[in-house]
Length: 267
Image (cartoon, rainbow, N blue to C red; front, top):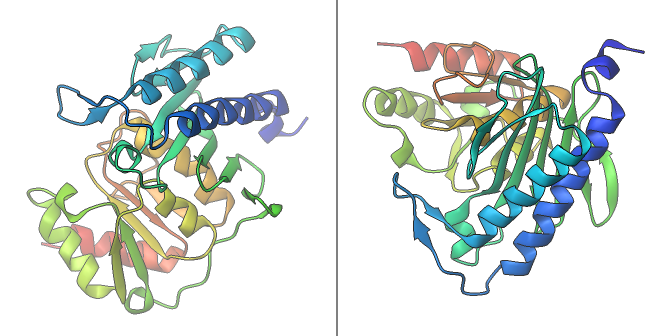
């Protein structure tokens, strides 16, 4: 058995697929149905769809691997010190979901000894899914079937397309740092939430930069982008984990990533 199979055996990959299907089914059931919207203490919105989707995923994990831990957006941490921990965001982009915008997704990550070894981005309405597993090429699946996802080459930051959910996420010193990167790039586009990371993995963008994220917002992307040939770190170039500071930099090209790190750190 290979190292990849030891840390993420096929039965875990199969479970990730079932989790994504469960969340997709619930999200599609409630999409554009006029759900009641509540505000969390941080003023972010939540709906019955968010909670039902995460509850369904937790039930599947508990039935299949009761010793695994879970860290979810809606119901918090359960056995977080376990060797294997699932990190769940049932609906990433709830603001889009509640306004009828199809560019929301479900995020699933699996950590082995705190290191991401599996990631899923599932787009319920688009019926698109990215799957990353440590030691394997990332795959992209849509209505036409499944194939390998691969980042694209980029000759330099001046030719790069940068994606980010919203400029408002860059507060304090992060604001000028982001502006340095944005001004060095060829094109910067906002919106997309988790969809941006899938676009990078499939070669349609060069950099995704975010700040003020929670672990369930970013951990699924590590295995996906790495398996597609890209790089995922924090703004200092360190690997991401549950305790990262919420600032994320992804790139399809090592040179662009290194240049971006320098710009973010510049005085």
